[in-house]
Image (cartoon, rainbow, N blue to C red; front, side, top):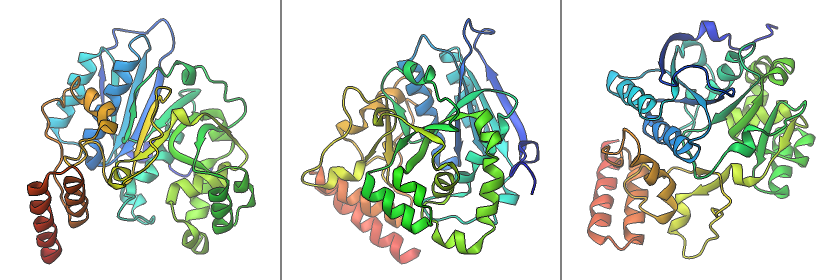
Length: 338
């Protein structure tokens, strides 16, 4: 089997580079990477801004791996690089060979960009930080930048609790996961370890096994957990604090976001860039948006029946009855024309 699953040179068809950093910094910058489709461009731009406004003394190179981008959005990322004197690279990916891999309504082909990203940095950087575009920064990441990963392939944050770990261990047939299952939305990657473990090659083997594919509930996250079981360093939840804005629909819930939180991961279908999520829990996103080239970009309206339904529920929860009724009518319309 080839030592690399996805040779970056075969997938990256073009790179746009906006380097406004003013030359080499006194210290090596941290490379922060995103793998997205066009639906997450708004979130990605604001996510980058959130890192920059909370870490003004640090240097970064941001990498966005995406299948397509229009000139209008390119200009916004160029403006962002100029505004904060930073370096942003946008890598355009040819997805033809990825289309054979499984996807769901919640996970597009872009979920597999994580493997391209890991391989892209082999021989280029010692470590990189991968982040989902629905992660917003609200504090200093200095501790993470200087974290000793040791011989582990990645530093990660655990997902849920021991009961969940056992469930995933049983479902995936990997007993080692009883000792920890991680969320793949944030990965501090040790690139030498990634190359040593041939992560992408092993991922290909799993995706080529039809019986294994049937066991996957969380696609690349399950795959990474299987391959990296026992080879990761678990770190504090403050670096990947998961929060669903749909929790706001409950009468009572425990909000895990606190003063120590560094990264908020907005999991679930409702995102802070949606028009119906006007809660205090969206503040990290809204504050960063107002300091970004997207400050005049309207929050997104529902584009399908599922979103319209959530939109209506949130408006009713917020006491915005007229908006809630309109959203439910929109929901029924979208159901009929689907």
